[in-house]
Length: 159
Image 1 (cartoon, one colour):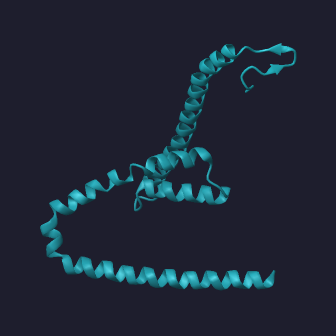
Image 2 (image 1 turned 45 degrees about the vertical axis):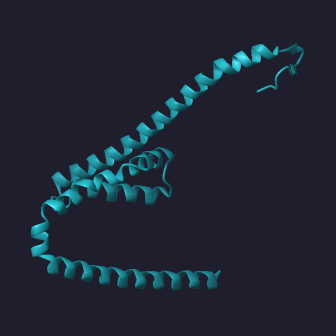
Image 3 (image 1 turned 135 degrees about the horizontal axis):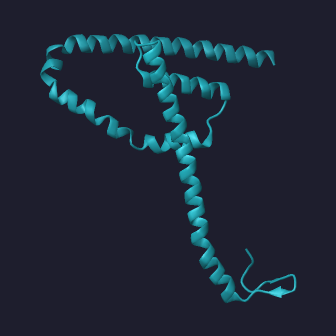
């Protein structure tokens, strides 16, 4: 945009016309940017829903053991790994959905409150299972990290 009152070629643009043009164009540009953002968000949400529907279809056809949305998430992860990057529409849709993640934690919290007596009755079984799974997970992650560090050190020595 030209500074106020600057001559362009041989035409001099008056300051009040420039200000009026900026005043008119700014809302239009804002609407265009908003519309482009909404379209990008819709594209990302469409991809996410398509992967969920594909997972649900595979669930009904072949894998009735796993939930459809989990299969869809695995397929989405495989697609993104094969692609090598996360596209901007998917990133925008995922980040906008992550804002509402705490709302998804409300039903389990209410369930814990409603079934507190049943949970208290099986407390030691639940505690033991959680402790065992935590110990197995920490051990596995530690082993995996050491393996990856050794592999990276060998690659750096070789190059």
